[in-house]
Every structure is written in structure tokens, then in C-alpha cells.
Length: 544
Image 1 (spheres, rainbow, N blue to C red):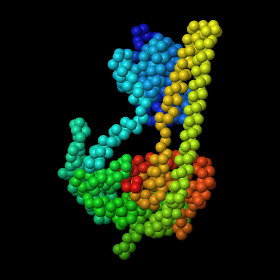
Image 2: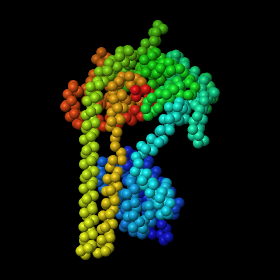
Image 3: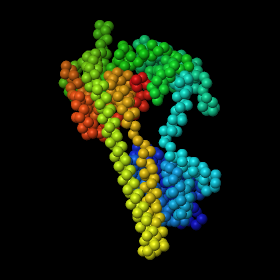
């Protein structure tokens, strides 16, 4: 550590609470803001301590080892480190008692706590603010999120879109002016009729998505919007924005549809027709990568060479025919076309065959919830383990005082040992306080997963094309192969579907199988939950 006379020194402490956050930019973002704060205040950064985010179940000192190192650093360089800098007080501790206990320890080292984003300090008003902030840090982030979403849900229920409208409408920018939205977003005079014409003609089967993009450019899309219309944009207006264009606003949290107050471009019947075309259940002439005529293209593999199947629609004597086929010229199936109707019929039959029945879903839900309760009990055991660790450290502290009283320790040795054990106590207390801040919502995830699993065939075709691959991985993690005249065989299924395949009304067997596959089941439930959140802006009807 440098020793520049007159220059205040400080340490920076950054922390995230999970392994997932470590992979993002949270730690770097915190450190950058803390360094800028130190530069503005004339503070030399003596050390940076980065807490890399341990699992919440690990309640040992290792969960806060960098925090302990930071306290030890301030103790070692007592009265030389004047500043302990964090981004927010909730990075420091999650409840008021812990916050001020550790703050007192730091003050004993001649070190003051500094928050980059909050006005805390030693003046009466600053102390009051710090107390309020420390108490507020005990609240779960869900509280803040709820306050934010309540207002948006209210706007949606009134028929207003609380976000920026899709192309074709002008944004009123009420929020920027500090006003509540009291009128629906009006149609854009130039862009609205172009998109409206495109939607109506696509609903009549007049264009593929690529052809529609070309047609909209001819109708003046580029002049109206400033950029060319590409198939990717067409995919969005036919998927992500379609319900809005039909006069519907969807609540992404509940999945419920509300009639919007804005002017619709198309009727609801036209919207359903477009959905049918894109799902492959109605005729169209689409030929792009996400060809609605061939929903299984680039999804199902050849049963011989395992290459992805492609598709084509040749004409003969004025008629058009639809086929899937293998494009691998070295494959035995090369040149042997599979009629579209045959493959898709077999696929739907296979999905129906692997779809769990309600009796399985009911038993599975019950077993998972029971298992989760057992898991929570393990969590409680870890908490008790931490409490025992606290008793050990407290006993150690008591012994240090006794050794000072009987003369075993000098005053200097006593102070050093006492401060070290107090740091351990503060660290264990914080870890114990945070033990239950975040828990995986298994019950909600089971509900999400069941909504897909019980009707997997419809869900497959209703999904936006860009999400079908994720859906496939959740059902067929290693893909699915098809051999003409033999069908789909017996592919490997994901954990939940595999349990259903083995299920034969033998609940006791299922209990053992669920426990044996507990980790992949939890991962799968979380993946279904994440997919549900991704789908909400596109097709909230998939939640029904």
C-alpha cells in the first residue's frame, strides 16, 4: 500500500448474490462506479474486494470471505484506511442490526462507510437517511418490482399500452412529460396503412414473409420508416405485435387479453387466420427459413444420417405438392420425399403419445412439492449449522476475554484477537440473515410447466419460430429423428417426459425416480419458467 502524505485511502467492496450474476457485468459495474466516486472525493484505492457470489445455501464464512478479508485489511491498517466504499448499503448488509454492528467495527478502525449512490454520513440528517436505507435493504426486490408493475397493470386493464407502441403507431411520450397516459397511441399516418395492407393480404395467403417484405417496400415502407422492410421485421409484425394490431393488449404477467382503446389494423378473425398460416394449419406460400408451410423443417432429423430435414413444394400440372426430404446426397434417404401431411400427422400423433395425462401431472406435482419441502428442511439444517458456528465463535470471543483477565494476553494481543473474532461474528451474522432472501418458486414453475406439458402439440405449433429450438430442447434434448414408414422411434426425452414414459400408476416408483432425477428436474422447471417469460410478449395465449 502506497504512503502518500495527506491522501485519504479507502477500500472498495463489491458483491453479487448468485453465481449467475457473476457471469454478467454487475461486479465490474459496481467497481467502476466506486472508483469514480473515490476519484471525485480524492480517495486513493488501496484494495478492491470482490465477492464472487456464492450459493445462498452455503451459509459458512466462505460465503463472505472477501468481506471478512476487507474487514481484516481495515484492522491491519488501522487508522490508515479512512473509507470503506460500496455502491449501495444493501451491498454491505441486508438488515439494520448487521449494518450498524459492522459500521461500528469499522469506526473502531478509523474507517467510515461510504455509499456511492446514497447520502449517508455522520451528520444527524445523514445518519437518519442511513438508518432508513439500511432498513429498506431488508425488503425483497419483488416489493419494488410489484410497485412498478401495479401501475402498468392498471394502465393495461384500462386499455392503454404502458410501453412504446409497435411500428404503425405514434408514441405519445406521456412518461417523458411526467404525465399519465389518458389517450391511446394514435396511428402513424404514413406507416399504419402500409402495415395494415400487408397484414390483411398475408391473411389471405397472398404472400410468403419474404415476399411480403418486398411488397411493403414497394408500397413505401422505406420512405415512411426510414429503413427497408426485411423478413425479420415481417416476422415481428406477424408474431410479436400481431395481437396489438388486432386491437388487443396482453398482460404479460397474467396472460389475460384486454381490448385496447387504440385503433386496430385488422379484425380478430384476420389475426386468427394469420396464426393458422404461421402454425402450418392453413395454406400459404411461405418459403423463408421459418417457413410456416413446413413447421418441422430444420427441426426433425433424418432417421438414417441424422441431418436436419429440409423441404420443398414442387409444382406438377398446375398443382403444388409439399414434401420434406433429406438433403444429404450420401444418405440412403436422399431423393426419397416424405409427404408433408404424413410427417406432420405422425409428429402430432407422437407428441400426443408422450403428452402426460392429468393423473401423472397431479402425482408429479405432489411429489415435487413434497421433495422441495424436504429440500427446504435441509436449508433449515444449514441455518442451524450456521447458528452452531456462531456459538463457537462467541465462545472463542469469551475465551479471549478470559485470557486477557488472567494475563495470558497482553493488551495489544487482546485487541488484535478481539477484533479478529468480532469480524468473524459480523460475517456469520450477515450470512445467516441472508439465508432466505431468495428461494426458487417451485410451485409457480410447476404451474408454468404444466400449461405446456399437458398440450405439447398445440404449444409446439403456436410458438414463435425463433423460440421453437428452445422448446425442442426441453422435450427432445438430443433431437428427434424420423424414418419413413417407421416413424419417430424411441428418442431420448427430457427428465419430466421420461418420468411420464415410465409412469404406470405406480406412485411409489415415481417418488424414487423424482428424487433420483431431482437436479435435472429443477433445471427443467426453471427452463420452462424462463421460456414462459420469453413467450409472454409474443403469444400470451400459450399460457392458457
